[in-house]
Length: 223
Image (cartoon, rainbow, N blue to C red):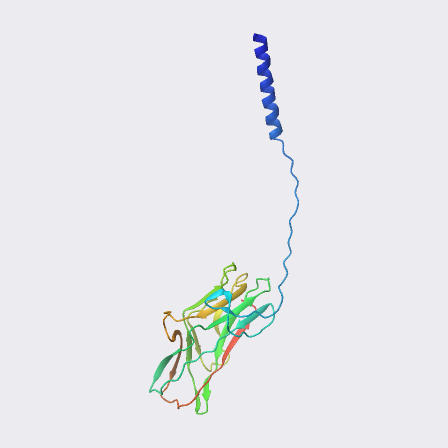
């Protein structure tokens, strides 16, 4: 009996060792998974909803085609005002002004947008003014993980300054890709005028009449 017991123990120990040796034996091979990215089509991008860029907007866009496009720019109206006796500031009637940029290049080269303003002119003459765009913020769709552009705020543009371009938004390399909007909304949602967009001028020498100025939006394909 004693000899049989010893034999059984030896078999168990051998069996355990054999299982361990098999479990620690590994063989590996390497294979590849590949993907290629190309630039998307160059068709125009429609304006999005400035409240929620995930939704389609209702504004008419620029129709610009290409891989880097300025899709929408706003007009500003400051309503009908009384002739004054000095420097006055007026607020815009536009409650949701915004600009929209789309970068479909896939190169990460960056971009910037600037603006300049002509003097206001009408049948009764011309005058200078200062346009201010305050509380600017950038938004994109929720699935866009690219770093947002840097937005200058406030943007102050003096009319009639020729080649002086004032920066609105800029990007660093590999940022600002996809579709982005920059918007200037009122500080309070119940506002009936937009206190983030103002126009300041000396009204003491302005004659009654209609006056308009031109905003020139300068879009550059480099940071």
